[in-house]
Amino acid sequence: MELKAGLVGCGAMSRAWLQAAAKIPDLRVVALADLDTARARSRAAEFSLNDAVIASNVNGLIAASHPDLLFDVVVPSARHDVVSAGLASGAHVLSEKPMAESLADAQDLVERAKAAGRIHAVVQNRRYLAGVRRIARALRSGVVGPITSVHADFFLAPHFGGFREEMDHVLLLDMAIHSFDALRCMTGLAASGVYCREWNPPNSWYRQGSSAAAIFELEDGAMFVYRGSWCAAGLGTSWECAWRFVGAKGALTWDGADQIKIEALGSGKREGLFEPLETFEPPPLSPEDRIDGHFGVLSDFVSAVRSGGEPETVGRDNIRSLAMVFGAIESARAGRRVDIVI
Image 1 (cartoon, rainbow, N blue to C red):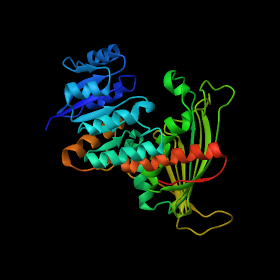
Image 2 (image 1 turned 90 degrees about the horizontal axis):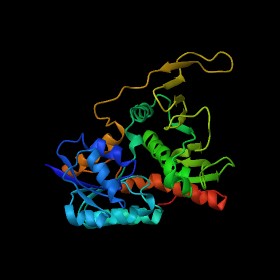
Image 3 (image 1 turned 90 degrees about the vertical axis):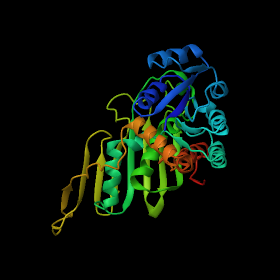
Image 4 (image 1 turned 120 degrees about the vertical axis):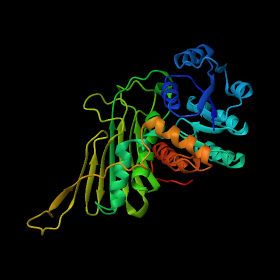
Protein backbone atom coordinates (compact mmCIF):
# COMPACT_ATOMS: atom_id res chain seq x y z
CA MET A 1 0.00 0.00 0.00
CA GLU A 2 1.49 3.30 -1.06
CA LEU A 3 1.35 6.07 1.51
CA LYS A 4 1.56 9.78 0.74
CA ALA A 5 3.50 11.98 3.14
CA GLY A 6 3.78 15.70 3.64
CA LEU A 7 6.62 17.36 5.53
CA VAL A 8 6.28 20.65 7.38
CA GLY A 9 9.44 22.54 8.31
CA CYS A 10 12.32 22.44 5.82
CA GLY A 11 15.21 23.49 8.05
CA ALA A 12 18.43 21.55 8.55
CA MET A 13 16.78 18.62 10.37
CA SER A 14 14.43 17.93 7.47
CA ARG A 15 17.33 16.49 5.48
CA ALA A 16 17.67 13.51 7.84
CA TRP A 17 13.92 12.92 7.64
CA LEU A 18 13.86 12.92 3.85
CA GLN A 19 16.93 10.68 3.64
CA ALA A 20 15.21 8.15 5.89
CA ALA A 21 11.87 8.42 4.08
CA ALA A 22 13.56 7.70 0.74
CA LYS A 23 14.59 4.25 2.04
CA ILE A 24 11.05 3.15 2.93
CA PRO A 25 9.23 1.24 0.16
CA ASP A 26 5.93 2.62 -1.12
CA LEU A 27 6.26 5.87 0.80
CA ARG A 28 6.03 8.95 -1.39
CA VAL A 29 6.68 12.50 -0.18
CA VAL A 30 4.11 14.57 -2.05
CA ALA A 31 4.35 17.96 -0.35
CA LEU A 32 6.72 20.24 1.55
CA ALA A 33 5.83 23.33 3.57
CA ASP A 34 7.92 26.07 5.13
CA LEU A 35 7.32 29.70 6.01
CA ASP A 36 10.17 30.32 3.55
CA THR A 37 8.82 28.67 0.40
CA ALA A 38 12.17 29.14 -1.34
CA ARG A 39 13.71 26.88 1.28
CA ALA A 40 10.98 24.29 0.68
CA ARG A 41 11.62 24.41 -3.08
CA SER A 42 15.34 24.02 -2.49
CA ARG A 43 14.79 20.95 -0.31
CA ALA A 44 12.42 19.47 -2.92
CA ALA A 45 15.03 19.95 -5.63
CA GLU A 46 17.75 18.41 -3.43
CA PHE A 47 15.72 15.19 -3.14
CA SER A 48 14.34 15.23 -6.72
CA LEU A 49 10.79 15.72 -5.46
CA ASN A 50 9.91 17.40 -8.71
CA ASP A 51 6.14 17.01 -8.43
CA ALA A 52 5.86 17.90 -4.75
CA VAL A 53 3.37 20.54 -3.68
CA ILE A 54 5.09 23.54 -2.11
CA ALA A 55 3.17 25.43 0.58
CA SER A 56 3.89 28.12 3.16
CA ASN A 57 1.99 26.47 6.01
CA VAL A 58 0.46 23.19 7.17
CA ASN A 59 -3.09 24.07 6.18
CA GLY A 60 -2.06 24.89 2.63
CA LEU A 61 -0.09 21.65 2.42
CA ILE A 62 -3.04 19.57 3.64
CA ALA A 63 -5.55 21.27 1.35
CA ALA A 64 -3.39 20.78 -1.72
CA SER A 65 -2.02 17.27 -1.15
CA HIS A 66 -4.26 15.38 1.35
CA PRO A 67 -1.38 13.33 2.82
CA ASP A 68 -1.85 10.06 4.68
CA LEU A 69 1.11 10.93 6.91
CA LEU A 70 2.34 14.27 8.18
CA PHE A 71 5.97 14.75 9.21
CA ASP A 72 6.27 17.59 11.71
CA VAL A 73 9.77 19.11 11.69
CA VAL A 74 8.83 22.61 12.87
CA VAL A 75 10.24 24.60 15.80
CA PRO A 76 8.71 23.57 19.16
CA SER A 77 6.55 26.70 19.43
CA ALA A 78 4.63 25.70 16.27
CA ARG A 79 4.29 22.00 17.13
CA HIS A 80 0.85 21.96 18.76
CA ASP A 81 -0.82 23.77 15.86
CA VAL A 82 0.84 21.61 13.21
CA VAL A 83 0.04 18.30 14.93
CA SER A 84 -3.54 19.38 15.65
CA ALA A 85 -4.08 20.31 12.00
CA GLY A 86 -2.64 17.02 10.81
CA LEU A 87 -4.78 14.91 13.12
CA ALA A 88 -7.91 16.90 12.27
CA SER A 89 -7.29 16.21 8.57
CA GLY A 90 -7.17 12.45 9.18
CA ALA A 91 -3.40 12.10 8.81
CA HIS A 92 -1.15 10.12 11.10
CA VAL A 93 1.55 12.44 12.50
CA LEU A 94 5.19 11.87 13.35
CA SER A 95 6.79 14.79 15.23
CA GLU A 96 10.23 16.01 16.06
CA LYS A 97 10.96 16.20 19.78
CA PRO A 98 10.05 17.63 22.18
CA MET A 99 6.49 16.41 21.87
CA ALA A 100 5.13 19.77 23.06
CA GLU A 101 6.12 22.99 24.80
CA SER A 102 4.11 22.11 27.90
CA LEU A 103 2.74 19.00 29.55
CA ALA A 104 -0.79 20.34 29.07
CA ASP A 105 -0.20 20.68 25.32
CA ALA A 106 1.23 17.15 25.22
CA GLN A 107 -1.81 15.75 27.04
CA ASP A 108 -4.07 17.61 24.62
CA LEU A 109 -2.30 16.02 21.64
CA VAL A 110 -2.65 12.57 23.18
CA GLU A 111 -6.40 13.17 23.51
CA ARG A 112 -6.67 14.56 19.96
CA ALA A 113 -4.93 11.51 18.51
CA LYS A 114 -7.23 9.20 20.47
CA ALA A 115 -10.35 11.08 19.35
CA ALA A 116 -9.21 11.08 15.72
CA GLY A 117 -8.28 7.40 15.77
CA ARG A 118 -4.87 8.31 14.40
CA ILE A 119 -1.28 7.75 15.50
CA HIS A 120 0.78 10.60 16.85
CA ALA A 121 4.36 9.55 17.57
CA VAL A 122 7.63 11.32 18.35
CA VAL A 123 11.09 10.96 16.82
CA GLN A 124 13.01 9.63 19.81
CA ASN A 125 15.73 8.29 17.55
CA ARG A 126 18.16 7.45 20.38
CA ARG A 127 15.99 4.42 21.20
CA TYR A 128 16.97 3.04 17.82
CA LEU A 129 20.72 3.00 18.47
CA ALA A 130 22.42 -0.39 18.62
CA GLY A 131 23.99 0.44 21.98
CA VAL A 132 20.66 1.31 23.57
CA ARG A 133 19.09 -1.89 22.30
CA ARG A 134 21.97 -4.05 23.53
CA ILE A 135 22.00 -2.42 26.96
CA ALA A 136 18.26 -2.86 27.33
CA ARG A 137 18.71 -6.54 26.52
CA ALA A 138 21.63 -6.87 28.97
CA LEU A 139 19.74 -5.23 31.84
CA ARG A 140 16.67 -7.40 31.21
CA SER A 141 18.90 -10.49 31.44
CA GLY A 142 19.66 -9.67 35.07
CA VAL A 143 23.43 -9.86 34.65
CA VAL A 144 24.00 -6.89 37.00
CA GLY A 145 20.91 -7.57 39.12
CA PRO A 146 18.14 -5.09 39.92
CA ILE A 147 19.14 -1.52 39.04
CA THR A 148 19.94 0.66 42.07
CA SER A 149 21.22 3.78 40.29
CA VAL A 150 21.94 5.15 36.82
CA HIS A 151 24.34 7.98 36.01
CA ALA A 152 24.55 9.92 32.72
CA ASP A 153 27.00 12.69 31.78
CA PHE A 154 26.63 14.97 28.76
CA PHE A 155 29.29 17.59 28.04
CA LEU A 156 29.65 19.24 24.62
CA ALA A 157 29.94 22.77 23.23
CA PRO A 158 28.08 23.07 19.90
CA HIS A 159 27.39 26.45 18.27
CA PHE A 160 24.04 25.87 16.56
CA GLY A 161 22.89 29.40 15.94
CA GLY A 162 19.17 29.81 15.32
CA PHE A 163 16.29 29.04 17.67
CA ARG A 164 18.19 26.81 20.12
CA GLU A 165 20.42 29.63 21.28
CA GLU A 166 17.32 31.68 22.15
CA MET A 167 15.33 28.91 23.88
CA ASP A 168 14.39 28.76 27.54
CA HIS A 169 15.68 25.59 29.26
CA VAL A 170 17.58 24.68 26.12
CA LEU A 171 19.56 21.74 27.51
CA LEU A 172 16.65 20.11 29.35
CA LEU A 173 14.03 20.70 26.69
CA ASP A 174 15.98 20.17 23.48
CA MET A 175 18.69 17.67 24.41
CA ALA A 176 18.14 15.98 27.78
CA ILE A 177 14.80 14.62 26.53
CA HIS A 178 16.87 12.14 24.47
CA SER A 179 18.73 10.90 27.54
CA PHE A 180 15.59 10.69 29.66
CA ASP A 181 13.80 8.68 27.00
CA ALA A 182 16.83 6.42 26.48
CA LEU A 183 16.90 5.80 30.25
CA ARG A 184 13.27 4.65 30.17
CA CYS A 185 13.97 2.42 27.16
CA MET A 186 17.06 0.79 28.66
CA THR A 187 15.82 0.27 32.23
CA GLY A 188 12.04 0.07 31.82
CA LEU A 189 11.77 2.28 34.92
CA ALA A 190 9.51 5.31 35.32
CA ALA A 191 10.36 8.49 37.26
CA SER A 192 8.24 9.67 40.20
CA GLY A 193 10.14 12.74 41.43
CA VAL A 194 13.07 15.05 40.69
CA TYR A 195 15.34 17.69 42.17
CA CYS A 196 17.11 19.83 39.55
CA ARG A 197 19.40 22.84 39.36
CA GLU A 198 19.84 24.74 36.11
CA TRP A 199 22.35 27.49 35.27
CA ASN A 200 23.96 29.41 32.44
CA PRO A 201 27.76 29.83 32.84
CA PRO A 202 29.34 33.22 32.02
CA ASN A 203 30.93 31.81 28.85
CA SER A 204 27.61 30.50 27.52
CA TRP A 205 26.41 31.65 24.09
CA TYR A 206 22.93 30.33 24.88
CA ARG A 207 20.38 32.74 26.28
CA GLN A 208 19.29 30.51 29.17
CA GLY A 209 19.62 27.05 30.72
CA SER A 210 22.65 25.62 28.94
CA SER A 211 23.70 23.55 31.97
CA ALA A 212 21.81 21.38 34.46
CA ALA A 213 22.12 18.69 37.10
CA ALA A 214 19.16 16.55 38.14
CA ILE A 215 18.45 13.66 40.51
CA PHE A 216 15.40 11.58 39.58
CA GLU A 217 13.64 9.09 41.84
CA LEU A 218 12.76 5.95 39.87
CA GLU A 219 10.62 2.91 40.57
CA ASP A 220 11.86 0.29 43.05
CA GLY A 221 13.92 2.87 44.93
CA ALA A 222 16.45 3.41 42.12
CA MET A 223 17.95 6.84 41.36
CA PHE A 224 18.97 8.50 38.09
CA VAL A 225 21.61 11.25 38.17
CA TYR A 226 21.95 13.44 35.06
CA ARG A 227 24.70 16.04 34.60
CA GLY A 228 24.99 18.08 31.43
CA SER A 229 26.22 21.20 29.69
CA TRP A 230 26.01 22.54 26.15
CA CYS A 231 28.85 25.02 26.66
CA ALA A 232 31.54 22.66 28.03
CA ALA A 233 34.53 22.78 25.68
CA GLY A 234 37.12 20.01 25.86
CA LEU A 235 37.05 16.31 26.71
CA GLY A 236 33.54 16.03 25.35
CA THR A 237 31.25 13.07 25.81
CA SER A 238 29.40 11.52 22.90
CA TRP A 239 26.03 12.98 21.91
CA GLU A 240 24.48 9.94 23.62
CA CYS A 241 26.03 10.65 27.08
CA ALA A 242 28.49 8.54 29.06
CA TRP A 243 26.50 6.07 31.18
CA ARG A 244 26.95 3.91 34.29
CA PHE A 245 24.27 1.46 35.42
CA VAL A 246 24.77 0.19 38.97
CA GLY A 247 23.00 -3.02 39.91
CA ALA A 248 22.81 -5.18 43.01
CA LYS A 249 25.25 -7.66 41.45
CA GLY A 250 27.46 -5.50 39.24
CA ALA A 251 27.75 -2.57 36.85
CA LEU A 252 27.50 -1.73 33.17
CA THR A 253 29.17 1.27 31.51
CA TRP A 254 28.65 2.70 28.03
CA ASP A 255 30.70 5.47 26.46
CA GLY A 256 27.79 6.43 24.20
CA ALA A 257 29.59 5.00 21.17
CA ASP A 258 30.81 1.42 20.73
CA GLN A 259 32.24 0.50 24.13
CA ILE A 260 29.96 -1.39 26.52
CA LYS A 261 31.58 -2.99 29.58
CA ILE A 262 29.97 -5.28 32.17
CA GLU A 263 31.43 -6.52 35.44
CA ALA A 264 29.39 -8.52 37.94
CA LEU A 265 29.95 -10.70 40.98
CA GLY A 266 31.73 -13.94 40.27
CA SER A 267 31.49 -17.37 41.84
CA GLY A 268 34.66 -17.17 43.94
CA LYS A 269 34.91 -16.34 47.62
CA ARG A 270 35.83 -12.92 48.92
CA GLU A 271 39.38 -12.48 50.14
CA GLY A 272 40.01 -9.04 51.59
CA LEU A 273 37.82 -6.01 50.98
CA PHE A 274 36.23 -6.75 47.62
CA GLU A 275 34.09 -9.51 46.15
CA PRO A 276 35.57 -11.26 43.08
CA LEU A 277 34.22 -9.97 39.77
CA GLU A 278 33.81 -11.47 36.31
CA THR A 279 33.63 -9.72 32.95
CA PHE A 280 30.59 -10.38 30.79
CA GLU A 281 30.00 -9.67 27.12
CA PRO A 282 26.93 -7.58 26.28
CA PRO A 283 24.36 -9.50 24.24
CA PRO A 284 24.36 -9.07 20.47
CA LEU A 285 21.55 -7.40 18.60
CA SER A 286 18.52 -9.53 17.87
CA PRO A 287 16.59 -9.48 14.58
CA GLU A 288 13.66 -7.79 16.33
CA ASP A 289 15.85 -4.91 17.52
CA ARG A 290 14.89 -2.07 15.19
CA ILE A 291 17.88 0.24 14.81
CA ASP A 292 19.31 3.03 12.60
CA GLY A 293 18.20 6.33 14.08
CA HIS A 294 15.70 8.27 11.98
CA PHE A 295 15.21 5.34 9.61
CA GLY A 296 14.34 3.08 12.55
CA VAL A 297 11.78 5.55 13.90
CA LEU A 298 10.18 6.22 10.52
CA SER A 299 10.08 2.51 9.69
CA ASP A 300 8.41 1.71 13.00
CA PHE A 301 5.88 4.50 12.47
CA VAL A 302 5.03 3.50 8.89
CA SER A 303 4.77 -0.19 9.85
CA ALA A 304 2.30 0.71 12.63
CA VAL A 305 0.19 2.77 10.23
CA ARG A 306 0.06 -0.12 7.77
CA SER A 307 -0.62 -2.81 10.37
CA GLY A 308 -2.99 -0.88 12.62
CA GLY A 309 -0.55 -1.32 15.49
CA GLU A 310 1.24 1.20 17.67
CA PRO A 311 4.82 2.45 17.29
CA GLU A 312 7.24 2.37 20.20
CA THR A 313 7.40 6.17 20.45
CA VAL A 314 3.65 6.80 20.40
CA GLY A 315 2.66 10.00 22.18
CA ARG A 316 0.75 8.40 25.04
CA ASP A 317 3.99 6.68 26.11
CA ASN A 318 6.47 9.38 25.13
CA ILE A 319 4.66 11.86 27.37
CA ARG A 320 6.33 10.03 30.28
CA SER A 321 9.75 11.13 29.01
CA LEU A 322 8.48 14.67 28.48
CA ALA A 323 7.10 14.70 32.03
CA MET A 324 10.65 14.12 33.27
CA VAL A 325 11.77 17.23 31.38
CA PHE A 326 9.00 19.44 32.71
CA GLY A 327 9.43 18.02 36.21
CA ALA A 328 13.11 19.02 36.07
CA ILE A 329 12.22 22.48 34.76
CA GLU A 330 9.62 22.99 37.50
CA SER A 331 12.12 21.88 40.14
CA ALA A 332 14.79 24.25 38.81
CA ARG A 333 12.34 27.15 38.87
CA ALA A 334 11.04 26.35 42.36
CA GLY A 335 14.37 25.35 43.90
CA ARG A 336 12.92 22.19 45.44
CA ARG A 337 12.04 18.56 44.74
CA VAL A 338 8.82 18.05 42.78
CA ASP A 339 6.64 15.03 41.99
CA ILE A 340 6.42 13.88 38.38
CA VAL A 341 2.75 13.47 37.61
CA ILE A 342 1.05 12.80 34.28
